[in-house]
Amino acid sequence: MDEAPRRIDPTTDRVSAALVLGCSPEQIGPCTCCQGLTRRYGRNAQLVCPHCRAVDVRTGSGSG
Image 1 (cartoon, rainbow, N blue to C red):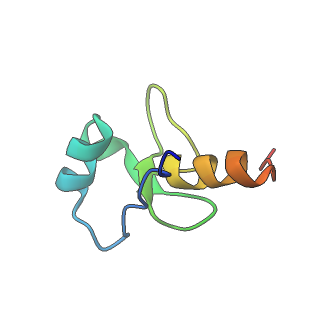
Image 2 (image 1 turned 60 degrees about the horizontal axis):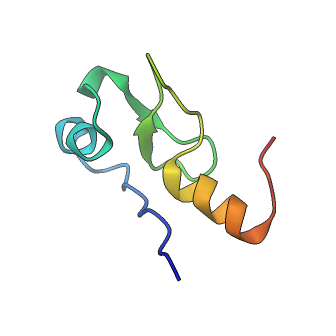
Image 3 (image 1 turned 30 degrees about the vertical axis):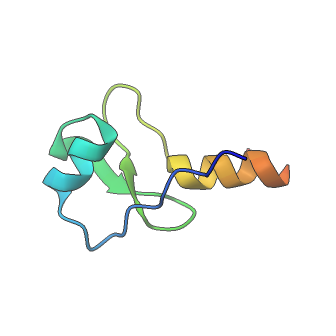
């Protein structure tokens, strides 16, 4: 079974998180569900991090 993407801890520096997420550090912000870091601002922004989206899909509990 495929693993869910890992949550990026909010104490991670924005430059490292941006490298993982493939965006600029200015686009990094908190996930509305878990407060982990995600691409929150700018093009292709998501309010919910990849980890929380994957968990929602696996459990069938959509966040919208």
